[in-house]
Length: 93
Image (cartoon, rainbow, N blue to C red; front, side):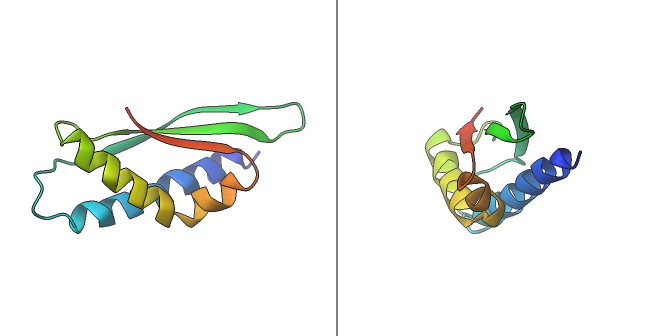
């Protein structure tokens, strides 16, 4: 119980940072993006063993999107906190 709130927090924190990165890249053509928390396994001790966040940027330039994903990941306090306890991977879908 409560794990889904943590996952929503990670997704929301990442998405707000990603949208800020996209906003700062006005010169790039960019359609709305989406994120999906794709996988989270739980051990018997009720902890997440890994969290994978997949980002879909539509027809955006993959290199530009990867750069923005890296900025958003680095700026997300929820992801940085979770990384101290479990595996967190953010990737282009």
